[in-house]
Length: 163
Picture 1 (cartoon, rainbow, N blue to C red):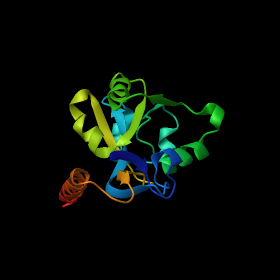
Picture 2 (cartoon, helix red, strand yellow):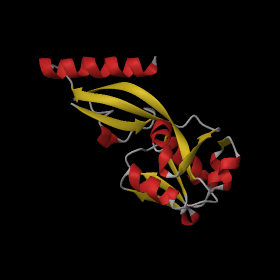
Picture 3 (cartoon, helix red, strand yellow):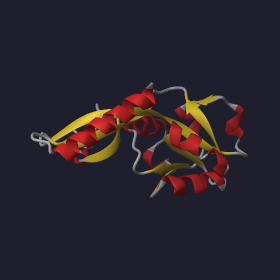
């Protein structure tokens, strides 16, 4: 059993297993994408941002959190040869680049909120919805009792976090 994150199920990547008949996949929770900005950024003057306002800044993306809908929107606004999107290996690395003032970051809103003491601010995206959905995946068919208990507990925690 594994827990994977992906953007809305309408455009899953095949290696995540959402279209794999040998895997059962169940959404656990959904998080909105937001913009991480340096505390000295003029973008903090706005309460919400649009994707069009992001194209003038270097953008850092954590490769584990993908949002194809947002990627499509950004690609439509800027020609591929002019895009300034940098992929980083962790959220912490993205936050480091943003806090140092080298650009802005795109990540799940709760993750940015947890990093508020790291020298970054957060602004919501107003032209979404841009979402990351976390799925619980397990092999289809017979489930052993330990996996079944884990799945029940994961679903219980997910429901409690929504309430």
